[in-house]
Amino acid sequence: MQNPLRQIPEAFADIISLQTYRKGQLLHRAGQRCHTLFLVKTGALRSFYLVEERDVTAHFALEYGLVGAVDSIMKGTSSRYSIEALEDSTVYELNYAELEGHLNRHPGQERLARQVTQLLYLDLVERLEGMTFLSARARYEHLLERYPGITQRVSLGHIASYLGITQETLSRVRRQG
Image 1 (cartoon, one colour):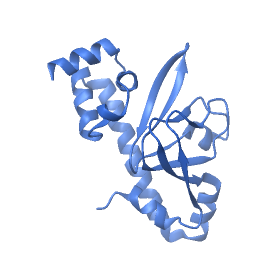
Image 2 (cartoon, helix red, strand yellow; image 1 turned 90 degrees about the vertical axis):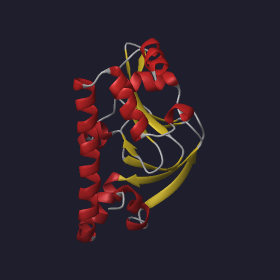
Image 3 (cartoon, rainbow, N blue to C red; image 1 turned 135 degrees about the vertical axis):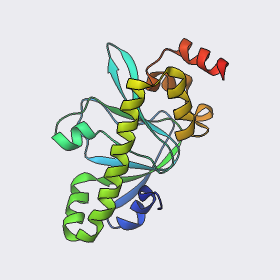
Image 4 (cartoon, rainbow, N blue to C red; image 1 turned 180 degrees about the horizontal axis):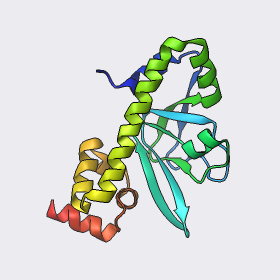
C-alpha cells in the first residue's frame, strides 16, 4: 500500500497550499492557537516544547511526514508546542476547519483520512512503547530505521532530546555503533 500521506496533496488539492520556510523559521509558535496541519514535501520540521527553559523535541517530520500542534487543533486552545524548520523546507499546509468541511462534502475521502490517522496512531504507539520498553541504543537504532540519514540533517541535540537521553549518552551509543 502506498503511504497515505503521499496522497494528501492530490486528494485535497482544492484546499491545500504550498509554502516555503527557511531553516530556523517557526511555522507555529507556542502559546498561540494552531489551525494548520503541515505536510513536508522537502526538508525537515520538528515540533518541540519547553520544560523549565529546556527544549524538548517531540516529533520530527521529514519528506511526507505530517506535523501540527494537535493539542491546539483538537481542543481549540493555545498550544504548548512550537514547530520549526530544521532545513529550508517546502511544506503543504492544510487548514483543519477547511479539511473538516472538505471531508463533509467528499465523504469518499474519509477513508484516506482514516488511513492517515491510523498511520499517525501507530507511530505514536511505537514511540510510547520505545520510550517505555527500549534501551537508549534500541531507541536510537529504531530512529535510524525510521528516518534514514537523519543524523546528517538534524542536530544531535535535537535527536538526544527526542530520544529522551542526554547528548553524552547519545555520543556513547553512537560510539558503540
